[in-house]
Amino acid sequence: MEGIPDPDREAKLDRIEEVLDRFPDRAFAFAFDEFGPLGIRPTGGNCWAEQAKPDRVPATYHRTHGVRYFHGCYSVGDDTLWGINRRKKGAANTLAALKSIRPARPDGAPIYVILDNLSAHKGADIRRWAKKHEVELCFTPTYASWANPIEAHFGPLRQFTIANSHHPNHPVQTRALHAYLRWRNANARHRDVSAAERKERARIRSEGGIRWGGRPVAAAA
Image: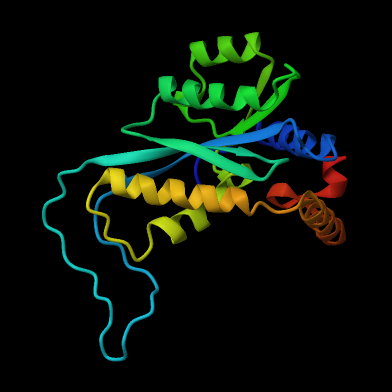
């Protein structure tokens, strides 16, 4: 692994693994991250086109629309994804996203939110709010964004809303993103499917003798 290793890497991964495995339906586990930057420019992709008449990507020389960042929230147990586009990352926007997660458990039970260790995710206001509202922030280690469950859902988000697109402005791009989210959440996977996938991943890890990050099971015990 390149870069400075996270001294708390193993402890953070253990905590995330415990949170995801503690409850049968994982109804208390959520994830958060930003997706972007989202610019206004032609983007290549796959499409149907007449033979010998490809859908060419036009050139752009002036990009005056700026960028946006999708602040995404994911309910692991319900397999639902939601969020909002913002002009920039920041502690205030992170806190707003976390506040949108808390109502998912209206009974006030403790919830756990997995997110990376970006400085904008760890401000004093965020920590105070989390402590007051029974929200535990489970940070992924440095260079381990793959440990965040929401990361796997950003690929389809890009494929269905950005690939092979030429949005004229951010409002149009945002409408395409929200249309995908509505379709995706209306077709969320059944919980039995998610449970079967978790069992299969656990079996594969057990057979390989390897835990997250390539750590031998024996060494982790």
